[in-house]
Image (tube, rainbow, N blue to C red; front, top):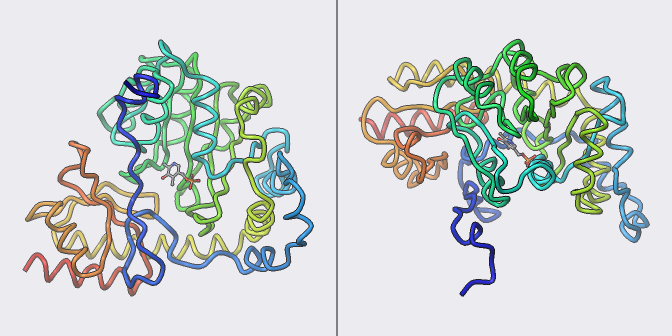
Length: 348
Ligand SMILES: *Cc1c(COP(=O)(O)O)cnc(C)c1O
């Protein structure tokens, strides 16, 4: 006997990357956090918060935040929907669009949360296993009710070119969700497609580029008709007053975000060169991590050996296509040097 729906009992839950206890001395390269601090303006906005804003309920639509997005990204404010992280918006999309019999398509490997959400709604998953260009053809053929493309993708770091996404959006009858969690580190983004197609949802987050993973802020950009539907499934006060104030300040400080992104990109290229020299192979990444395949030894052993040396990377234990790979977040140059030194020791 169970209190839960049958599909909930049967499904495998999402397993987040480990978060060490505060104060634990560890080099943390496992969950794609930004190694640099958030904008000082965001921290100041939290310090300066009028306590009356804590007494009252927050603005359910986080209008100050949406206006800042509108100003900075040059999109009309009625095309922005705030989320408690972009995970929150993925949940809204699934609740609003999925049910048994509906189809959800995505290329694999990708962010496992898409499949988890589909399983919660007991929808049917169509996973497609190939490179992004070929995947786009097959995603178009699958013509699911909801198609998810993370671009740059996690855990591969590979960008799907805008013209490919543009073509895919035009061929799909269902929704195309373009998850741009890593857009701040990539050479191009697909934001304009949200205005050009009536079936595209762009997702962004402040967790990676803006160094605010702990704050929980993200947003969607789409057509008002789509956002109206999603809004019906939104938790009433999904975005709190503190997060709204800090995130607004962070969005308005583009210089800070862009300067950190440039540092991360430079370190990504430098670390890539060092790992390639050690014989690691990996696809070209446009994100803040590399998905590497070690030349010798197995990924699980290297993961454990790094962990024993106080360096945490991501090993996707239950995922067969990722069994021989590690996802390594780009850290500061000191952290990356410690990683390379440890790998040399382990492989010697
Ligand atoms: C990190 C990440 C997200 C979620 O970010 P939030 O912290 O919930 O805003 C969404 N999609 C992908 C592909 C990610 O890597």
